[in-house]
Amino acid sequence: MLNRLTLLVLAWFLACCALPAQAGSSDPSQSDPSQSDPHAAIQLLPGQAHPEGLAGLAIQLAPGWKTYWRNPGDAGIPPTFDWSRSENLREVTVLWPAPSRYDQEGASSAVYHDEVVLPLRISAIDPSKPVRLALGLDYAACKTICVPAKGSADVILSPGTQKGEGSAEIEQAMKKVPVSREIGATETLAIKQVRLDTATNPARLTIDVSAPSASALFVEGPMKWYLPMPEPADKADKANPQRFVLPLEGLPKGATLAGNELRFTLSTGEAGVESLYRLP
Image 1 (tube, rainbow, N blue to C red):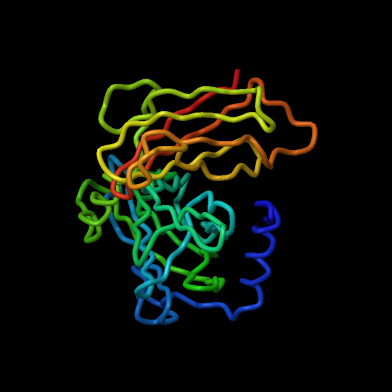
Image 2: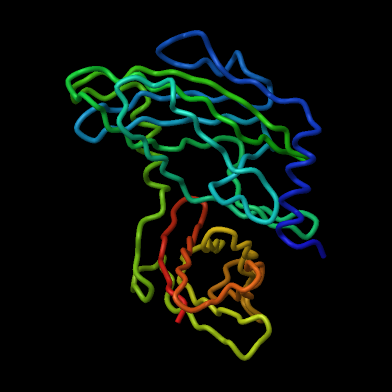
């Protein structure tokens, strides 16, 4: 089986062999999805300039198409953001709704299907003036193969507390952004316990979770750690696993385990939690 790094390179090669999809608009206040490629469109949604400083990035895909989470998994291309054309913008933080797992031909990816709104937390250089939020986005739109897509969009966030037209969509997306939760929490959606077994080769983690419905578990490690996706443990209910296993493979040559931090995201697709775990 191809290792994860090889799959990532292969996915990028296939993407580069395809023609790019375009999305954008000449409207300085809001992008127009109707002017984009038929498979994908982006739009910036005005939310609230102050005091929360929220906007949204809507990615609309054709039925059956998907795009990738911040950590795409075994094969995929994460979106990259260029805010350099923005005005009066101090900082923007992308918030990521809980993704879904997609398995195909031995590779597993973290994706969004059909449509997703990424909330954007905004801060202004001068809060008394409007913020012109201007985005250049490189991302992937995928069905059976991935097509590299490029989009551009602009929106004006006026000073004050009045909510923009996209506030309802942004608020709905915020409900899907995973919340931080300590390992061992008693809530119905939580990571209950993580155990490290160094007697196996490679070492292996067993992760016990609590989820009220079908869930997927995603893991992110340090830079250049190409960890696989956790799989349901033997004898676990495949429809709603309460236990996952993760072989600690795909590490850089010479890397050690002790002291490195992993971030777990447990997702039902509609809600999620994030927990940090430091390897002993």
